[in-house]
Length: 408
Image (cartoon, rainbow, N blue to C red):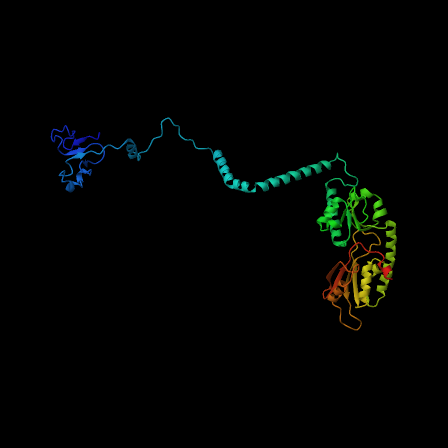
């Protein structure tokens, strides 16, 4: 219905109403409540009647509220359900595969992207190291294959390579613990690297290369398969005639040998003379009434198997306090004949007719007061019996020759 004013009695337009001729009661058509023309208030409760002096009674002069615009009409119908366009097909639900792929992608973007942005350098470095190691392994596999040729003296196959590595580690550990702190060690590059990893300073290592053709100037040489291949018979015949310790067997054998500065022949002569001097000094200890020697230790003394430094210090100590010699040790595994034992376990003995024993502390103070070459490399307190303790002393290699002959 349009927004024209209509008579409230007959419903016809105001200007055409036969009853009121435009002056009767008039209502509104369309939407909204009737309003007063004079005050714009709602016709039924005009607030301006008193102030305007009008006597409309809320119905006299009215205008109709215009129809709401099209957008308002649509808004007024928003409560009604809207039907979907007739030509648009209904939406299809995604498949489980699509849902799963979307879930994984969103999770990866939330979790992995921040990690990748902060750690990408570490990831690239790890990948680079892995590629390098894989390349080295592949190269070693090719070089160790059945069709390749290996260097003279080098073992073939994985187990043999493992045996070589084990022998290197054992030899390096022995040199690091048994060699003197100022001894120079000659070795091939690979063995020198293992020695340095075990704590031997690089300043004490003489690397045998094509430039350095011999071990002269060193005190010890670590004879690996590569060193034996380089020197052949000259290694024992000229440079290092005596083995102090050996590890492994066959092609994997590694020997620690004493270098002869004046040649192999002179070294063997000095060693034989030193053995004779040791036998004499050992016999003197056995006949010393202030020294008590256990059964196994007596054999070492009579055979000249005890280091000259030990014999000299033990004889001096026995002149101060009675002494029990429990055992001798310290000769390296696989050592050559004539290589002496460099350690001993001793304890204080009670003087005749007295019960007082020299304490372990007094024995330790005595050995610490010695000077090189008679100063032991290490000391240790050992338990001899449940109620008795003693002292273990040890000297290092190389063993000096001719000390007892010089003293006499």
